[in-house]
Length: 242
Image (cartoon, rainbow, N blue to C red; front, side):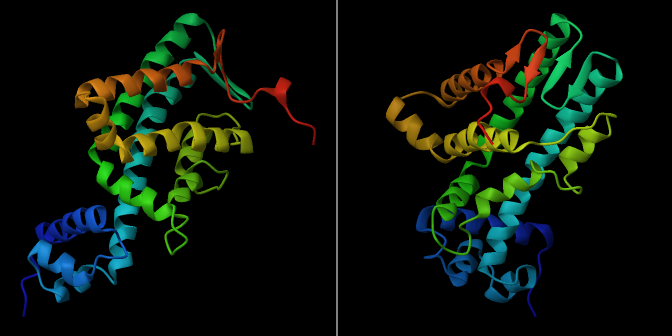
């Protein structure tokens, strides 16, 4: 019999897999490699995971759960509160605030949210790098990165959409919003995390300098959506012909 080792053993297996997938690549890593790096036998790995693919799925699911959790915290503590207090109205094409002070407060909350997200992707950059590399291959995990999009769609089980709906406003993610969020919010974060160490090396910036520089750029993109007392979610003047 082998000692299961509880949470510690499972964490060692996952951490070993992260290091190996990141260094050797997912395809080149064998279960026996993971067992050796984690200092466990293969039977213990198969106790926790059905396969090597299952380990990668576990990593991706953890990233998604935590990203959604961070977003829900922001929605519930800031967006929903502003709606409840009468400072924010969610409209189909925009977030409308009662005055400039409410917009300013919302922007400050967004900045704090962006900092939390950026710190999270930096912390998890090795897993995100694996996710990005696998997404570029024409293999089993080609569409792994797009799993983020399911949390931006109109599915009734979407926890983010459900949380917004609970504010009492009808809200729907248009195709424009989904694509904008994916290509101008998620992809920049994924790319930044995946190339963080490389950028740091060629730029000679410290971790903190690189983090602060990226945050400033990210905040500029977000600020570009603000027009008066509105945060625009859709530019109807630029709609293309159907």
